[in-house]
Amino acid sequence: MAILLPELFAMLSSDLFLMLSLLTCLMEDKFPKTMPYIYQIAALMGFGNLLVSKLFLGVFDEYMRFWYSFFYLGVGLANIIAVNIYLAVTKKMWNLAKIWSVGVTFPATFISAVFIYNYAYLQGTVLPPLMLPAILVLSIAMLAIALGVLLGPKLSSKTWRR
Image 1 (cartoon, rainbow, N blue to C red):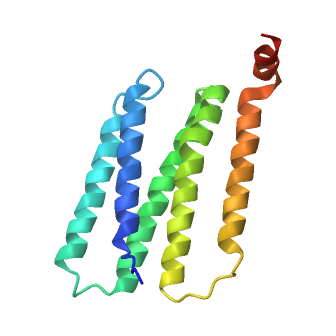
Image 2: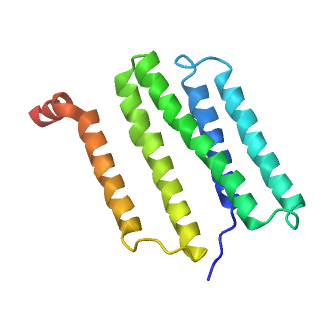
Image 3: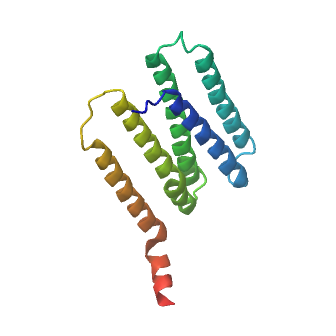
């Protein structure tokens, strides 16, 4: 049986911060110029977190390592959602915010939920047996709704007229 280490969450969130840095750099006209660099510094902090975990593996128990890695993952997901809100509310780019939610927010939260559920299961935590299928069905429903709203009746009517 494979055992997941809590540092998986720190690694996942470092990857999320690097993805945010790349995406905000690619969409440079929609974000402040310093935002990609802030996300790169946040990713470096995550790699520093991994280094500290490795050096003090015997000192920190798994419970403590889980909570600071889990907190760092929460900060990464909160930043993804904050960028989505920034695009929708501040910049008034509703279509781009919809695309961001379907292409970035949804996959990141779904992957994180699956890893958290798997970690809890492997640790022997008793979870409701239908929790993972419920997360999967809810995520697929959210994706279908988001794609329906994104495409909307205007785009679908143009496609069918050809």
